[in-house]
Image 1 (cartoon, helix red, strand yellow):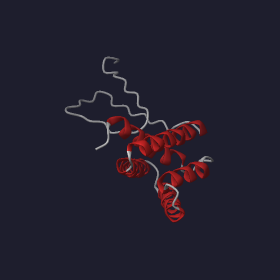
Image 2 (spheres, rainbow, N blue to C red):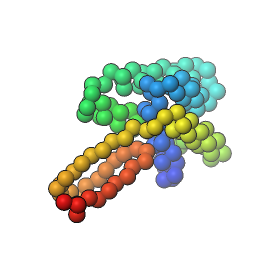
Image 3 (spheres, one colour):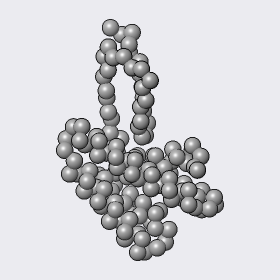
Length: 147
């Protein structure tokens, strides 16, 4: 089982794949993630490039609105899970190397452009036993007393 810090890095990596798809940074990010997963195996690298291209195609084909967000969330989760599995299977020394590579790819993605911003307004809403699932940076502001 992965420690919380590694899960967070995997989550950021999943978000980076989705954020980079469709941008000018895609080619570099795509190659970096393929190399990260392939660990030097050329055949596996080609398979990873195909998976990444499939992700980009799915994201581009998504309809506007709720469909787009649902597809984006699913793709982030898919890549996060794959990264978690990769990290779990590696010896600790190699795990730390992959974490460093992954953090560099996330930083490269962030430097390439602003992350998508989502704003939800829940005016006069009541929440009981609520949970929020997200990836990346999130700011939650309680405005219930501003009426």
